[in-house]
Image 1: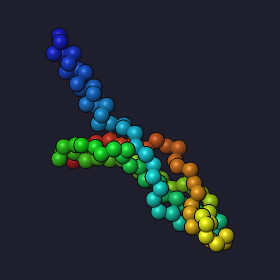
Image 2 (image 1 turned 60 degrees about the vertical axis):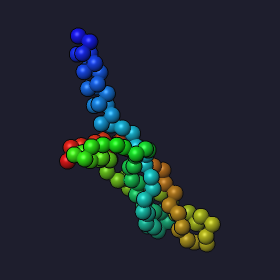
Image 3 (image 1 turned 90 degrees about the horizontal axis):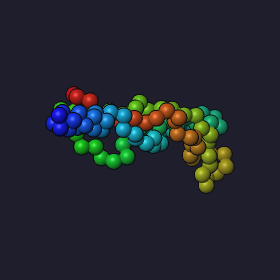
Amino acid sequence: MKKLMSFIILSLLTTQSSFGDDGIWVKGNWAQVNAYCSQTYECVTKNSILHSADTVVRTSDPKIKIGVCNAAGGAIDTCNECSSSPPNEPCVIWIEKK
């Protein structure tokens, strides 16, 4: 019975660490569209993930958010930064077999 419980606990821990870990959204490329801009956000891991050679780390698809142009210290009529908020959707990291 003790071996069975150990197996179940180990199985649960392995499953939880392989699926649904939270990542963070980071800004990628952006483009100006008149006074607005479109900002790409990419899902990345908070920490390095160790995994076997027969697996691959997957992430949520990139998201595009609309923001407003910001001069960011440049000329007032320029767009040097895209001010937008990160996506509301969770950034999820998981491991899959190749």
